[in-house]
Length: 208
Image (cartoon, rainbow, N blue to C red; front, top):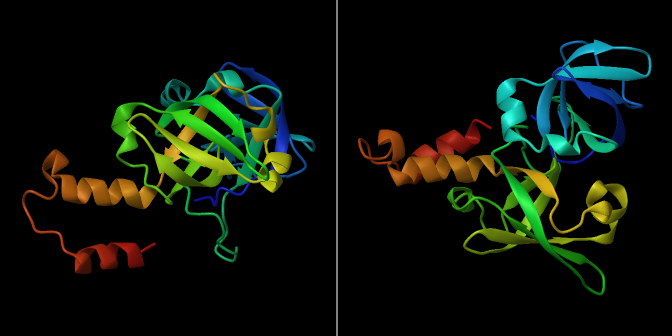
């Protein structure tokens, strides 16, 4: 699990043969989980200045691999003693979004991101979403896109300041929105065979 709060902007040293080597001030251990641009990956090698993670075929198919160069977002997995800010992020990318429009406001910047229509169902106004691993709040939701308002602090401390229209980004929708949708939608047989009430939902939520 992650929080969606970026630990640092690390640098890619090499990405080849399914292995990504990263230079970072953070020193993980072999087997640790690290989120790279929001994708949960496992550390398989390390040196005093770098660590290497491996990408499976499924991961490479799901994420925007063209962004695994230059600067990247890096966040180590949560520890039980950590303070939970941001929101609960699994590091399991749902889909790839595309930035379609950027509008500068007086003290913030709006980003409009288009995603496949089947994933809009999991995006909720004022709900949480992770974009390239960053925990953000959704302002508005449209038929195939959503709007985020990014404050100056986030722009200054993430790669969002370098994003331009047309860039593809990794999207992880809110875990609880996905669970609740499947519980009530009746997809895959869930919800059709039993009545799901709020007591059940409270019990599920209490487990996280």
